[in-house]
Amino acid sequence: MKQRTAIVTGSSSGFGMLTVIELALKGFTVIATMRDINKSESLLTLAKENTVEDFIHIQPLDVTSSESIHLFQGILENYPPVEVLVNNAGFALGGFSEQLSVDEYRRQFETNFFGVIAVTQAVLPLIRAKKLGRIINISSISGRLGFPGLSAYVASKHALEGYSESLRLELKPFGIDVSIIEPGSYQTNIWASVDGMEINPESPYTSYMKSLLDEIEGGKAKHGNPREVAKLAAQIASQQKSPDLRYPIGTGVKTMLRLRNLLPWKLLESIILKRLKP
Image 1 (cartoon, helix red, strand yellow):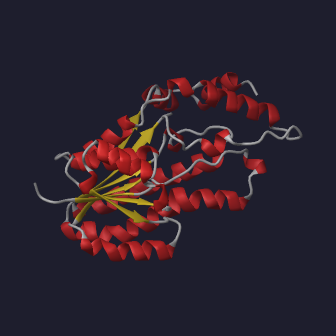
Image 2: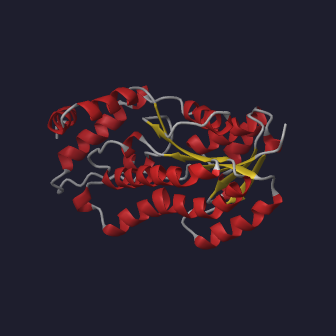
Image 3: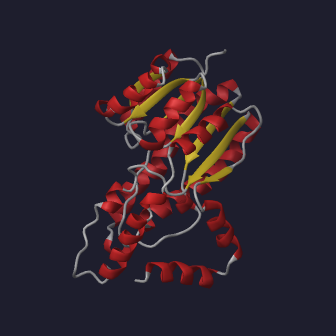
């Protein structure tokens, strides 16, 4: 089997960690990047359990740091040609728009959007030189539909979707496919910052926030196994035929998107607001 290199950002946990394993099982040499390599223990343990530790190389990468990205570029020449980039690094910032600072919005975009652009620009010349490759951006159902209390996260994913559409059209003539995976709710730690939000009794959004947090907590039992998303990413990376642009995945996601496309907005918003009962 020819040697192929895949890069995965945000590999210390969740979708990123599991995607590293699935790509390694497909025979890729995987550069698993994370901001803090001291958090690689879970990945290394899982790699040994799947006997793919020899295929995985852990490298530090902070997608919000130009210096970190430049240093990362320098190590890529030591690997087989890069064919796949999985932009997974991200987090979800919770809070109502009126009460979030502009700097908090910027911080959300620095990781979820500008970080994707920066890493893609750094790696793209290597993929383009091969005239063959895949860029897979991990988006969210939130990239297609807004939710209250998550405007910063939703906006960053909507931006990622638009960027990915344009990037696909730009790179298609070079033999490079861009795909977006749009997960619904899965058992990952991405919602940790949302779960940890403090409820301010003096806020005009207090009851709304309680309803939102109750909805998130109540739905956790139905969250899917994140390995489904990782297997999908590995499938897209390794399949022979050109992949689709979008891959919605998760319980109820396709139904939700159909409703988003078919129902008048006023009816859709009444359904969402009735469910939350703010």
